[in-house]
Length: 75
Image 1 (spheres, rainbow, N blue to C red):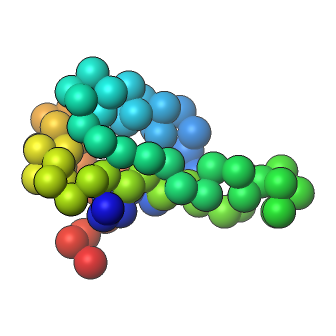
Image 2: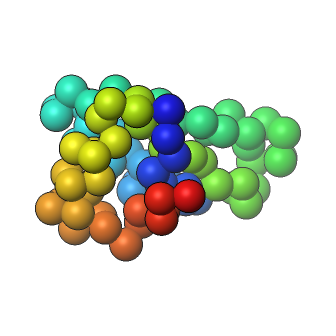
């Protein structure tokens, strides 16, 4: 899996998840339950991971949907 997005913006994560689900792109959100550890203050970003074989398609979909600024560079 590769990380495509890292953000504290829960609305953005939800919108991207909806896009990926509708496009049947394999993904998961990592660190979404870290608020238990941090005391629910929301400082730790969530990471959106995509299965390797869907990375290129996911990147294109995010660019086309206007979420290109949220993409992490190909680390």
